[in-house]
Structure formats: structure tokens, C-alpha cells
Image: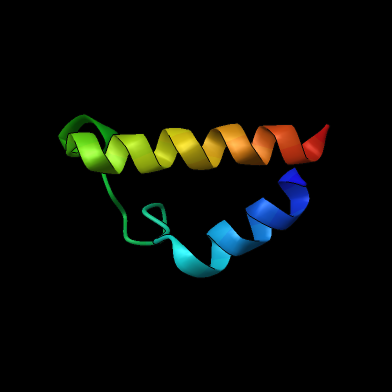
Length: 46
């Protein structure tokens, strides 16, 4: 299930690393998206 969710996230959610976002200057909603994507990706790799 997490593999499918990770593919959907890759298509829908923005990639902040490609945009060159500095984590120290990120807004709270951007940090929430980054944390969510990290959680889903780490679960998909298991």
C-alpha cells in the first residue's frame, strides 16, 4: 500500500529539493509535507 501511496505523492506533491528549499527557512506547511513524504517513502522501502 505504501508503494502505491509513494507513487501518488511523487506525482501530486511538490519536490522541494529540486526547488532548492533551505530547511531552516521552510514554512511549517512545507515541513509537514517533507515529513509526510519521508514517512511514506521510508515505509515503502521496507
